[in-house]
Image 1 (cartoon, rainbow, N blue to C red):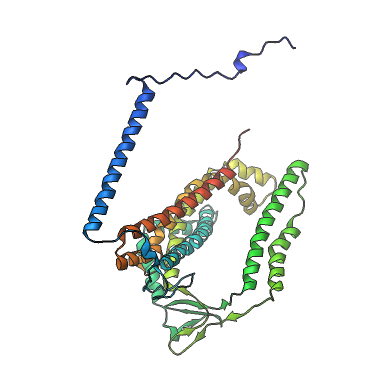
Image 2: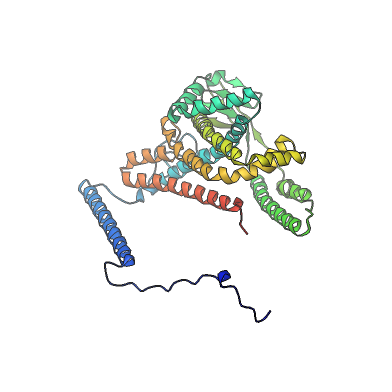
Length: 403
């Protein structure tokens, strides 16, 4: 009816008008503003004093400041680097870049491997198989009670006990295992491989768009179109076409055992193996508990409903339980990823040259202690913030949306 009166209980409540700030100490908002100004002013005064005192002490000791040393020639040797580096020719900036990439190489691969291993162990702890469940529990309880530094030293000493290069263990004709690491066959990188890698990145982006389009069509019609032929073409066909277009090179460099050492091929050093193994195994013990608690947080009725539909236990876990458990797993998992990244700084104990090791050597050679420490802090802060931003985005994406 047009003449009906709306129920006032359904109307949105009106906000009270904002009262202007009174110039009186009894006004709470004025007190809050004053206290905030005083705190900021105190912080600025302390910062000004520290900066001034530091500059005065550095000037008294004739120590130069600034980051100009990054353009100076570096003489430190770096055992492994993802970028070209030559002692006596490259700069300290290039040396620090090599250290940063070495840190990222450990952090990225470590996060992936620790997630896979921790997830498997967390699921195994809930297995109805008594032996598998107890072995997983022993793994978690044993490794979490041993300091990470001791574990890194254990793996390093264990790998150092392998034979010398001239007595290296043969794992086929392409892999040699010795106390310096693993020497294995290496692909000779050419422009065709760069083009194939770029095509693969384009294919992944295209596959995501195809999956989103299929999901929207399923929401509208209830029928999901078949996407695997297009996805296969984007992920396999597109890189293959790019590789063939550049001549399809496939040159491999095999390691050859010489009289005293191994020549050719690629190498995974003992230091990197020990650091990666220790970080992955240690962090996986914490991730396993996160995964186990996340699965147990899903109501048991979800298991029963899936079994009533005829789903096997593995399919129930993959399609029903784990997607719901992710909402519990992701937030604490972020902390473990951050811990793994920051714990990689213990690499200096086993001789792996990450950003901490390279920056420490740099500041010892140049005397730029403040700048060196600032670079280390900036690198770890940037990596940690990047991980946090990505995980927060993913957590928001999988969160339940209330309607």
